[in-house]
View 1: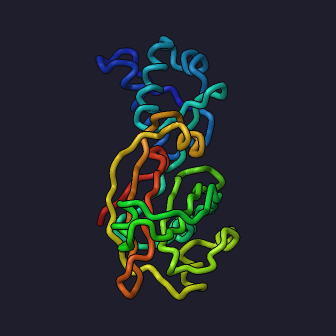
View 2 (view 1 turned 90 degrees about the vertical axis):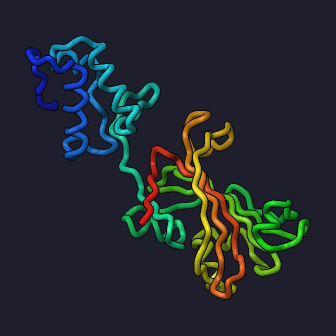
View 3 (view 1 turned 60 degrees about the vertical axis):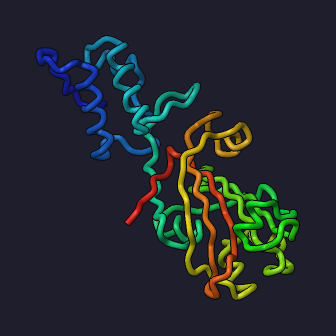
Length: 242
């Protein structure tokens, strides 16, 4: 059980003391990511405070993203957020592996479609030209964290099959099979809200906060090789700008 550090005599509100005490425990690692947080009644008994005081302190930390509530299971310490640099061109798999996380992907769909206006413009092709559209659910340690839609000009990647992506990253496939490597990209980052399908796939509530990262990726010959937009769970990522 966490130590009792609430001072009943000070003018500082009890819920503020509890909030900062719990925050300190989380920041110092005394409570580990994924660990179940003590129940409200247990904390009430331990600290000798009202239930509303405990509930308010917990709500503050849920709002800050340090605790998460799971319906029917209780309150848990949130997982650490994954740092994602905006400036580098690297595959999702490479980024996860570099942080000691186990990357995974689930192919939701892979099909050839006709390029619509925006996609055609960003890929530098004509409207109606063939585009390979790949939708993948990205996993970190088997937990869904991002939903990625890649659009690639079909004439650059003949013979690409869904099975090619089962055991390797897209960039590794493009390099090994077509000799095409990413060199640089232009990106935009904005906030979005999860629609019902996205929420279901990502395991979040409807209208949950997401990051929307859009990128146009160029190969070494300065041709557009991919247009990709990715929805990241805001509770699992933070973006770094150097």
